[in-house]
Length: 147
Ligand code: CMP
Image 1 (cartoon, rainbow, N blue to C red):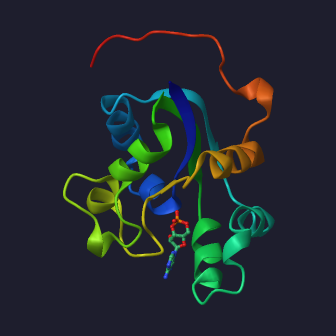
Image 2 (cartoon, rainbow, N blue to C red; image 1 turned 180 degrees about the vertical axis):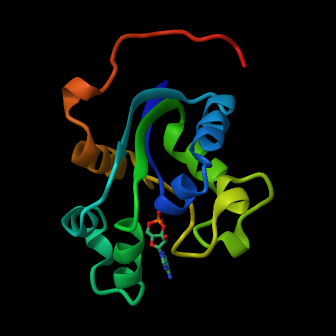
């Protein structure tokens, strides 16, 4: 059964012009886009999105980074979406990321790690609802050419 997950192409990846290449990697891995937008996190957005990390030693640096420039947020769909996307994204710390993963290719550090992928179906729903209202999510089936 197809499921959905949420991803953020983070400010360092957007700034280095990697948005298109990352979206290509998602498409090649069989993900279909259900919603997509470019956003600028405010400090309030970062506190809301990363609420579970408030008070951790890396939190202030994380907020500064996430508010430093535009991000691209998306809802993507395929079978086993949460696990498949987390494998493609790679380890949180790019020093541990496997060859071929998005973080191995585009991360600059543990904080500037290029991309976010939700860790569960529940997190995905909470996270995408911060950025997308139901009418912004494409529900009709559509097809696109093989790539
Ligand atoms: P992500 O898993 O997308 O969301 C939390 C982010 O906090 C994580 O990516 C990293 O960018 C950042 N971060 C910085 N330092 C740490 C750390 N020590 N442990 C976990 N996450 C960290």
